[in-house]
Image (tube, rainbow, N blue to C red; front, side, top):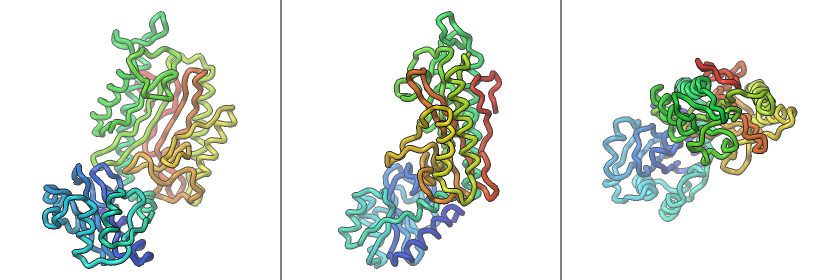
Length: 388
């Protein structure tokens, strides 16, 4: 059992004992961060059911045909779908519990599929939600921090590739940028960034955001339109490694900045970054990190633009791990603890001024304060050799 699985096991044991429950159940496929946390990366594309009983048994019920593959990596009991005689993951969970004479309450996460809950309830179990795993995942083990540091370091290669191409670009008479005789576009940059990430051994995971000018705030509009000198160019990356751990790094560059709005906005977000990082201390309220960063942006006369969470709340940062966005949330009053890994992403956007500015960095809270998981300069003007 890995240290991560051990932490999950402890959290579930405490939750089951406190609630006098019969078991914990979760259902998901290989893309589900919670299931990867519980059972490791060797999961099927179709949903599996994970069961942890009150007696401590860990049971994984993969879909038909997948049992042999997961047995090689899962430290627990693997029950094939064929032996249970059912196909749906929720049914497999209920059947596994029935085979162990479980009765009473079954705990799940709030995100468990509704169909799985219905199968459990039809089998006679009372289903209740627990946030034990949310809290456990918010505290990273040394092994997890090592992986996050590696993927964040790989992310710097993607930002560096963008910076180098922008710095090497020449300017046409109409102000648009050219590199190697071809117009420099966000699509070209996106391709180059993804290639750099792949060479560094991480998966871009569809999370490469490159945008310029007024399309900056809505990357869906990024296309083959040439980038113009003076346009803020955002490169915002969240690649993941083979086990599913994400990085997060963003920088904004301007070729031939006139030192006006974009320079002032860049100063606001970099000062906000410093203010937020300075609050990353054990015992500090997570929301204070957001508040101090936002206050710095407002002090420069801008609105602080946060990132939308699933509940619609906006903040200038959040936790990162097996999911791109996870606890700790910087809108919560929960105290930070050593092992929390958070991204701080102060942002300013104004379409009337032609775009926006963002910087984003990943840091781990330590006993002494914080440690950036990778270093990258925050210069607004791009450098030909990158700013790492």
